[in-house]
Image 1 (cartoon, helix red, strand yellow):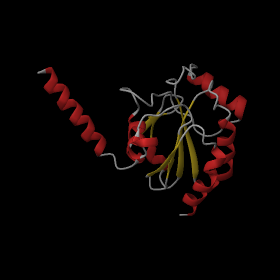
Image 2: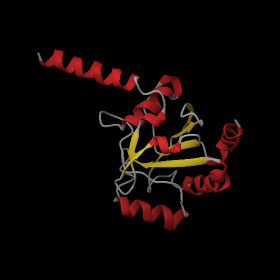
Image 3: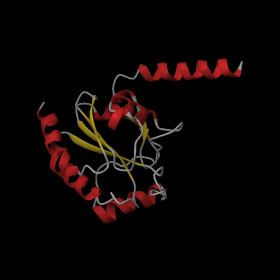
Image 4: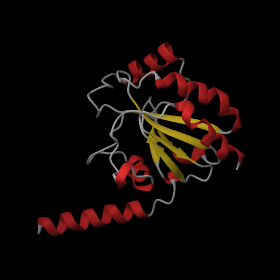
Length: 180
């Protein structure tokens, strides 16, 4: 009986995920814990990034902020999701994370509540992103901090960039989407 019930729940949750047609169907929590609909980003080009304060890729915050300042007025947003799943590299509280980003990198783009991006507790937004833009060889798992997803103005996932892709390497792709 338990196996049947678990099978039903799994199928039900998979079917529920199928109903999500774009990222605007999701809600997330801000770094201050307030629920926010992704629909507030309609008609904007988005770069969604899982971030960490104690990672070798953390200096990418500087490049992300440069992109944000260069394109925000044209309808570009960066949405940063702290994650502690990779080597425990984001151990801080929401206040510590926010302060770290502002003081060390002058980050002004939105930060959200700490989430899981992999595993059974992965945030539904990340389950969706990984499904729409799998990584190398079709793997859906996020391999490390600073994996980036580029989203068009209609809420469609366009592509995924690995951790080693620096923000400046995404500039041309952002520009193309802003012109559409």
